[in-house]
Length: 160
Image (tube, rainbow, N blue to C red; front, top):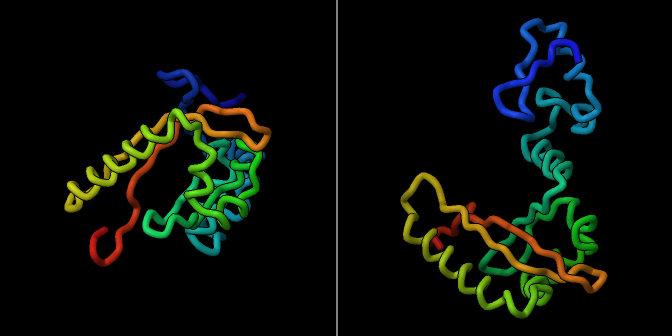
């Protein structure tokens, strides 16, 4: 492509110096898939939802106190065969029942350690990001390996 040069790392490129050379990138189908531009977006949350729905990765947010999912992007169905409403309606306990029995104890233990670490770092500018690797049952009955990352985004008034 005109104006596109390979950067120092594979997969990266140096952007064109001339504005007109950059126009083909701004008109790419990926840019149009986002819908409204930053300036036209109704809100940051709307733009973020559009972005998370375009990623092939599963993005989910749940309330650790209630076990209810607050948000799940559109990747759940293609990755694991479940409808979003099923996980949102039934919550974390339902999802936990899909985790392979041999992995459940380790996930629970690691989750408790992650919460303790987050509580220990409550005055820090950032919360730790914890990696989990486990098997989860696909809607077709087979097990798929997942690598997920978790962190505390928000706390109640009691800092829990």
